[in-house]
Length: 113
Image (tube, rainbow, N blue to C red; front, top):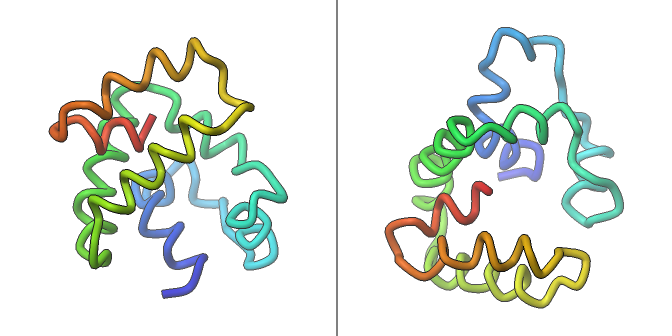
């Protein structure tokens, strides 16, 4: 699966929304997003800023991405570790989101947020 295909799977709800029909992901931009050289599109971030959209994203991750992973629990744990070690994320944000990681039932919502 290409990086672009991966992001289309991840942001399926955003891409399927009629308001975003003119949005497209070019390979160069996607590559910069994936390597951290550029921030994800503000249009995507704004779309998923609402709690209801974050719940949809958690469902999409469960439906579209977890089946592709050989060890999804390890992947989620690695993302959590990166999150905790990231100095650019405020302590307040970490304190707010860390409780979502603790029960396994809300880990996908942790990822979505």
